[in-house]
Length: 255
Image (tube, rainbow, N blue to C red; front, side):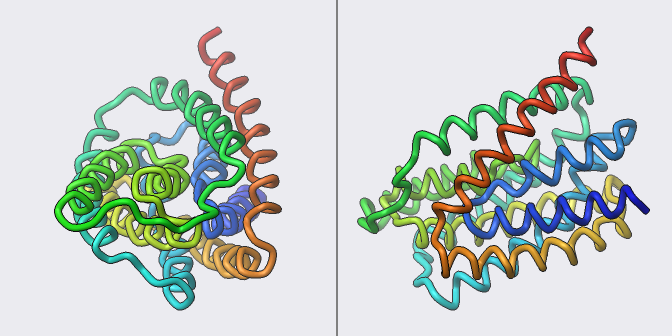
């Protein structure tokens, strides 16, 4: 019962953070690994996908009601992400659990450094591309991030926001809106594979999905009311704590 409570709180926090700046998996996946250290990583990630697609879907709908979606970028990126996330999800069922756990703190550190450095992320909306070039870049971004999300996942939303800001020149809200749509495609593709291959705990995932939806609703409202500055600070604190914990766990396993 305590384990389910811990995971419910983690899922709520993941939904909240993901709705504003992305990176909810940075909270949810380490929580799953901590509560179920002996469960196959693919099963934990598959369960995470079930919760994540619900929370991300709610966040995407919230943004879509308030932000004009750049479908010329979102559509090709989402299509590529769906295909390559499936490939990534297949790949993750073939890798060593130790490799997965050892990689996590380095991913967390990279995201923390990036988030700290990007103090004015997406403050101006100035699209840089159009036509065939825009669609080609969107396909590339969707393919790369889609595979990463299916293969591992933490920080996918943050990476998407960063790329849509840096590569396409979107502001924060525009980048976040498109990122949520692509993220839904990633989660859907990965979820198909994990469900088909049996790497999914449906009851646990459903419970966490309810908590994620609650967090997404609160996070979306916070973003609109207070902006991203407060949540960004909270995000950095959470990531820093997770780096310490997952780094310590990795050292212990190697010792």
